[in-house]
Length: 225
Image (cartoon, rainbow, N blue to C red; front, side, top):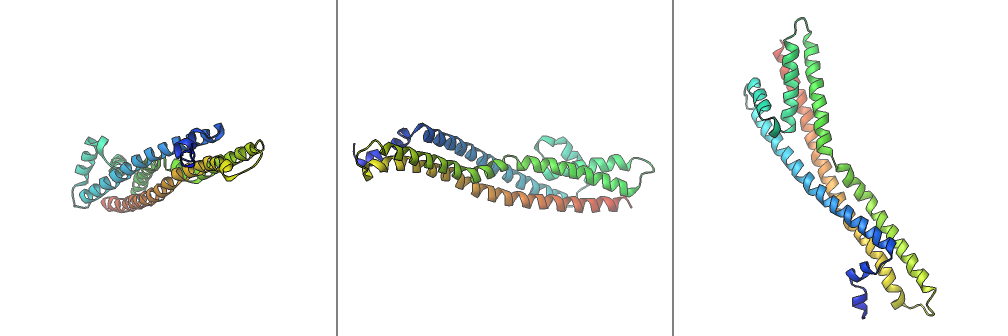
């Protein structure tokens, strides 16, 4: 068998030691899950941004708040995060406002608490699986490095049974070990890039939600006068 055949990627993986193969299999599985969550998170963030922009247009177009509230209730399963925040705040505002002898400040504070609770739930949903991408990006290179170190140790132990150590004898074992590092980097790099991108987009959405809650609270406060 010639050197090019010995050093082909498939041959190196199939002939690696059991520990290195286990590391490669683990990294391959992690990489698959990472790409799954990357695509899933991409659609989630894209939909959240589109729904937020649509609701902002509807809200600031000067429409009636009661009509927006009824629309949010009727289309609850297809509403976006900002619309659900609005729904929670306006529902609490309407309920507290109907109570007698309740200070206007308490009505606004209750509405803000309702919006804040919904905001936290929405952000938890949008943030889901982001920590997994961060973990893959930070841990995968070290897992691959462990496989590389183990493979090189295994290769050098095999040299003790060889009368004369040559590059041809050492190269396949070292190459097998380095494949583990390559797979680790293949898993880590997309996860890091995706995490940074999604974290930035989610921070922007969070800022928009918080700004909306403040602006909506001011609108409700004016209605109490």
